Image (cartoon, rainbow, N blue to C red):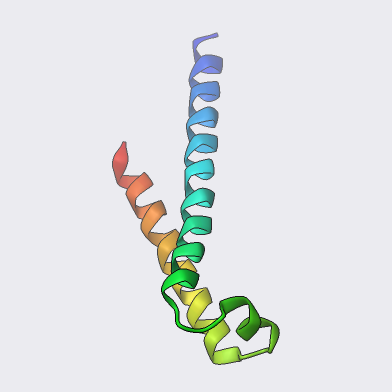
Length: 74
């Protein structure tokens, strides 16, 4: 029974960090869009590939940073 509670605790811990990571990515994209002088959504809809790659790499770096923090927070 103790193993079940430990597994449930770890599962909820992972779900909590997933929730935090998704919100960090969403707020990071909003922050990026606010400080970028271009209309981010319009540039991506216009199929501006270099700009889309730059936004994707920014979000990838933000995700990596959050996951790195989570891995070292325990």
